[in-house]
Each structure stands twice: as structure tokens, then as C-alpha cells.
Length: 467
Image (cartoon, rainbow, N blue to C red; front, top):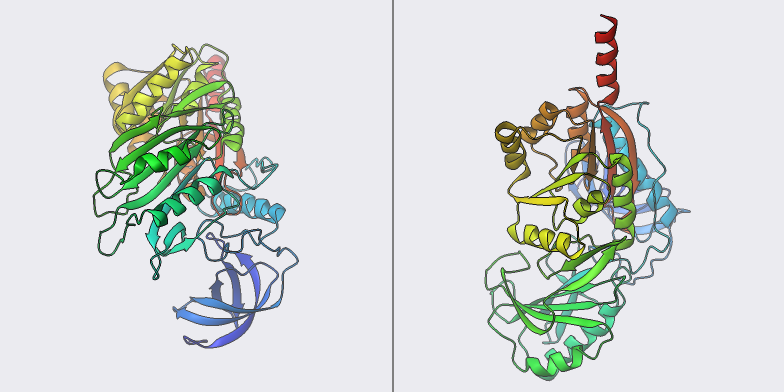
């Protein structure tokens, strides 16, 4: 072993890892260092040593990287939300573009044929999130702790001002913090599963200005809630205040039961010209401005002329489906969460969209069943799976259906690369890749990919005509 635990050394940071950690070498031995950047010269302490690599703690920056900036947020290094806020934003974009490209090359085996469009970054990479989930507990001296978890832990970093959340949250949290103290409301203790208030969920409609506050409690009610409601409803835009019951001993934030306390049980917002109703339990993209960019790219890649049948798999509350329905003949959406499908149907009705239908179930179950039993067809299939990517059975059904175009919207470049390779080994071509920065100052990235078999079909037609 070149270096032992607790030994210190000086290294140059040469690369950034998938979680935003700096990567350097000490006598050929690779060390991963949180909060270090490419170009930093640093003194580190080895904390965990394996055979070929290890993890080290940043002790001192001897020479800062030219790309290092002072974070706006004083707790950015502690909080788990902004792993790379100390990296110049243009360099963040370069890192994310390379992250996707490297996954496509290393995992997918793609080479010079990749057509990577320039990454689309944000005009303003602050205050972009329309949804916040603040864990609540109490400090050792009994004061409210309201903020975000430290990276990789459930230790709450108390936060009064977050630079990536909607600015309205500052006043909301201040009011709730004062209420908890003034009326001695108990706060949740995860270890003992005691205390009342667990989380504060907020949503803000960036177009409509509507605001939602949902209080997640380990109980049935909140004492003196009328006082809190009267204070919250004075905030400009306040539209919905509700209670969510979660008595389970779990890390899952929301329970199944929502009790309206004041106003509407939902807020509304727009992505482009499409209006959406959003409840506390709804899945809705957290960055509406970049989501519009993402969906417009997906719509462009779908190449719709008005006569196509489209299947939108993992459709959520119908956000992409309703975008596609504006230009398609018929859209079918599939989502495993029943409440999301109810929201999707309601959103279609709100917008007067009659050419969109929705099915409850796992995409890998519904699509094969509809294909085998009903002989369904699609010119275009859009998939927007969770981080684990698509199930192989779903990809096999797509291959059997032979849609002209597959538009893959991904939140994980590794599983995107794996699934794209699977489809390309079976007749599809990777045509275009567009990376979109949805989550400034974090390592997460969204990508839209167009896969097509139209050249293959045209080639077969040409061969048949010659024969």
C-alpha cells in the first residue's frame, strides 16, 4: 500500500468524478477528494484505502484552481444539494457535457459517430427549483433545525436561505420556525420516531405565482394550526396549505393521506402553453424553465407531423404526453403510480386535449401486453425512465414494435448509455444527443437522445426494389 489511513500527502487534482469529487494521484495511487477541483494543488489526509484507490479528506488548498469560485451559499460545502457550487458555472457545463460523452463512449461503446449538441445551460443558475422538501428536527438546545441533509447523511444543516430554491421559501421557513418556537410544537426525532413535524414541502408556480405549503406530520393534526395558517396565507401567492400524514418509521418523506387545511388542494403552473395541476403527491419537474427546453427538444426529436401514434412511457402526470399531443395524432401514456395517472387525465381535460389516453401500470408490463394482445403500433416511442433505466423486456418490445424514432429522456447517463447500446445493437442508430442542465451546482444532468431506424428501413426498401 502506497499510503495508509490518516497519512497526509500533497496531490494535484486532474479530474472530477461522477459525484463531483476531485481526482488526483499520489505516486500513481488514485485518491478521490470531496470539494477539490481540477487544477487545485491540495494537502489531503487518506481516510479509506483500498487496493487500487482511496478516499481522502481535503485538509488545505495550497494553490486554488483557476476555475474555483467563492460559493454564494456559506454552507454549500456541507449541504448535500450543491456539490459543485465552488466550480465556475461554465466549467460545470463542460463537466456535465463530458460526463454524458464519457458514459456513451465507455459504457455504450460509441465513438466518433456521436453527434453531441452543445449543452444548454441556464441563463440564471440560482433560485431555479420550484419544489423544496425541508426536513425538520431540533438542535441540542431545543431550537428548530430546518434545512437540508448533509451529503450522504441524515444530519440536518440548518438553512435560512437556499440559493437554488424559490426565494419565497425564505419567508415560509421563517414563519414556521417562529411558530414552532412560540407554541412549543414538537419536532421529529428520526432515531426514536417521536415528535410531530417531520418535513415542510413547498411548491411554487413560476408562471402563475401560486404557492403551496404542505406540512408532513407524525400524527393526525398540528396544535394551533389556525394561527400558522393565518400567518402563511398573508404571503403573496399563497394558494394551498395542507397536512400530510406519515406515521411510518421510514425515510420516505410523504405519506398517502393529504388533508387540505386552507385554499385549493393543488396549485397550477405552465410549461409552455400547457397548464398543469400539481398536488403535494404529484411528480413535476423541479426546474420549469429548463424543463420547457428539455420537452421542446424531445418534441423536436420526435419529428411529429400530425399523423403519428406516440407512446410516452414513464409519463408521470402527463407532462411530456401533453406536449407531444399538440402535434401527434394520438398519444398513450403509461405510469405505475395511479394518482399520477389521475393527474394526467385531469391535466388533459384542463387543456382540452382529447387525443391523449393514459394507462396505469409498469411500462415493462403494459407495453408488451398491449403489443401482444392489441397489436398496438407506434411511429414514435418516448421513454423517460428513473435512474435505473429501462427494463430489458421493455427494450425488447420496442425492438419488436420497430417505431421509426425512439426519444430517450434520461436523468442517468450511465443507464442511458447501456440502453442506447442495447437498441443500437438491434437495428437503431444514435442520431443526436442533447445535454440540458436542469440542476445547476449539482452533479446531476438530463439528456435527450434520438435513436432512429429510418435509415435501416430505407435500406431494406431499396434492396427489395433492386431485387
